[in-house]
Length: 629
Image (cartoon, rainbow, N blue to C red):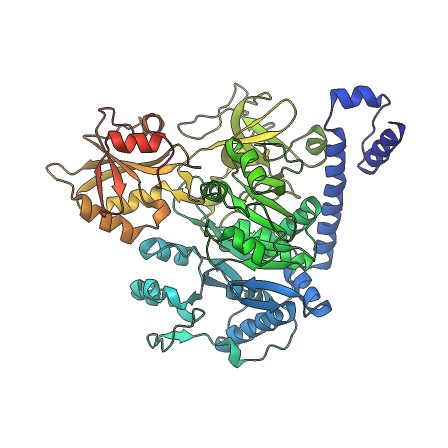
């Protein structure tokens, strides 16, 4: 015990913490002490490295190119039956940068180019190639189409869009609007469609025609320089481009390493879309920063997931809660949990009810559950596999890093409640409340590209003291008496389904374009057996109108990606509104999809391409958790 106590005292001194004698009592009173001190030691190393990168003006691209220089033959990307070494990826990064500037020499640092590409090696070297010339890569969700796609392109204020050949039809559908924006169209035939002849105003991007030899990278002035836009629904409104400085991928990569031990001999499997911050900023950036190998799936497949893990000799994979549930739903196999190398997992949204089962069945060495948001200025990571938790917010972290506050809020409006002094009402440990992150010089909030009002809406002032500022996560959480923090639910006008954030405003807009519908109130409802919330819309029809459900089905499938399409409808005579004419959602969310006499309830039926009245058989399947919405 004396040796252990000496180790803790030494570690505490390194962490800048003074611990009095009485180790046995302290272990009983504070069993997580060693874990917290060990974590804080890592955090100090992280801050030191970030400071070095800031002073030396180093971005994630610098570390990638250094790895390519030192070990050019080391595998960088595994994709399907192809292997790309660090040297080969670096050559394609250079080719991309040369081709872009050769096509338009007027492009300069700070200009934006949209990127609409499926998962694969191309999206990685395109992202890095644009960075090499100081061009901002605006990462577009490839599920979008029509007005939603156009909105994201316009919001990027970009000069060009680089898109894969599989998206040519989606681009042609909005080509007139893109022409009005003077948007240049560059197509990559990365799916190798033979004989593909795009329209005359679409330029085929052939990077193989230019040199892959290295050349100087446009220098950054600091880590706050903008490197990317990544779209997020936020808590209200249509998707908006979060401003991603060079600090974000670097911070994610460093944080990844110090907590998961990601190393050059690791193979990191990613089946999440790379336009997402989770995949791009953590998996991709983390792997190329540390010289590890990234194994990329074009898309997630529950039936092929573990075969890929074995085939690529994966040592770590990234998940979202829905992926874990889909994998558990697969029939058990004799080789479940059998791999060439030990496997660990990192991700977010793994619910407590399946945590232990998932870990045991698939022989996961350790699960690292994290919390973060694309635009957020703070994050959590569960490093001790505490079931259901997304990390710890201990006194040591609060004293040395910054403030995370859990405050009372109005669940109807999502706004924090305030006391007589005008400050937010702090909640004690064990209470469920709205999580806020303090904005400081070290924990800055870059906001969104576009009108300043979008950024201001995410900032809460006068939280603990007059004049302070906090980032509003829009999430309800709980911190227990042992400082473990748990995600509870999401507030505001978004909900999460199939791993995607769904904007209720976007869905309401699409429904409102259907001729018979005068008003639509969209929200998410809980469905047993599924993570997140399924989309449901309460709708009011024009007076005297009737609803053609088959035509409505065709309309929403052509307007919205699958995850955003309402799975349930509730037809109402009139909408329940607040005093300021806003839709009331809380009571409707509580009602869920039950046919309780409050309007008529319908469920989507993709096999018949329509909506049909919900009945007892539907309810039986849904409540048993067997639905495949």
